Image 1 (cartoon, rainbow, N blue to C red):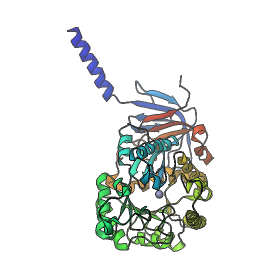
Image 2 (tube, helix red, strand yellow):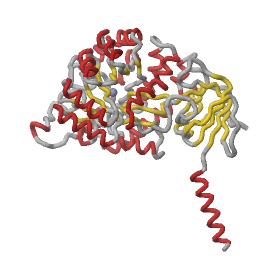
Image 3 (cartoon, rainbow, N blue to C red):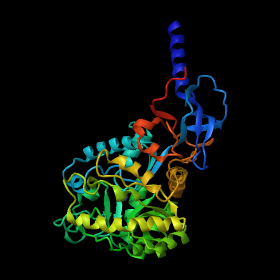
Image 4 (tube, rainbow, N blue to C red):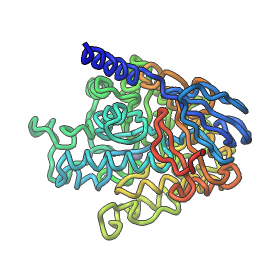
Length: 450
Ligand SMILES: [Zn+2]
């Protein structure tokens, strides 16, 4: 009998533990909510499980609450990066030729953790096999940010996503053997409306929250000049219609104005890069109420960013880098002048550790925007961009990128005030004292409350 009671008690305790709400109260923070222009001192934030339930000057702690004294430090929403490639931690030729896919996958997990530990609680992955990584992170198996995955790049033959070597022949003309790049979920090299639809739907089937289409020449590819315009209007419309049928949208890789205008006409809602855009193209973005995600920090990026794993930048790549960088200032000037909706995205990829380059974008953008404007781009602004994923958005329980009741409990506490000095964000080891994602604490260097 005694044993019976003991078992029951143990069982009910276990059940209680499973279902009990975990509550955390953060007190004495100066809070920036993600949308306003100032911080509010002496504020408390109550978190229940994975959501923020109350933000107020004083909050009575419910029984069993863990209390964290923020000691007057600055609490802001978790940051987001709208252009990452978590699985692309080596050169593409290494990934397709030498690295075992599981090694690539484990490096992707390490990269995801690096992004999270820099304060990025959400990323939009714009190409690469990350569906499994996203699932593992959401399940809590490995630490990392929330991922909005695109899946495989959709590229035309000879486009930016066609990474075949000179000796790898077209599967269409020379046989049906799958290239490793297709088989491993990196790219669909497709031509014509029907093939684009198939590729788009394949990605959507895997759980893509948006589609990534290559609409023009790129730096990190050998057979497409920067000036090239990729995919016909009809092909682009095919991708857009497949996306819209899933209630989501298409983002394109594009530098030049011709490709940008064509993509916008086809219904594309987000242009990534855009470094060579002229005023006509920028005005078209405005007219279509679309988004632009440029990388202003590239002007100052180190050489190994452009040629990961290589001793020096190959001359062909260097030529392309030069063309793109020359347009960057004009693009940013025009985007600012026409008040284009700016997503915050770094495209920082190519090596473990290079994730830290994403932080350079904060300082780079202050040449055009105030710190609080840049902060909005990387929090509540990006959240609007991510929300274009409509019903495919896996995180629909509350808003992201804001500190309000009902929002996801993704938040950061900094020593120093990034609204006054954006450089606070660029040294997370030193300044970032607490990282919470989905109500879970991944770093806490604040002293105990007692
Ligand atoms: Zn990219």
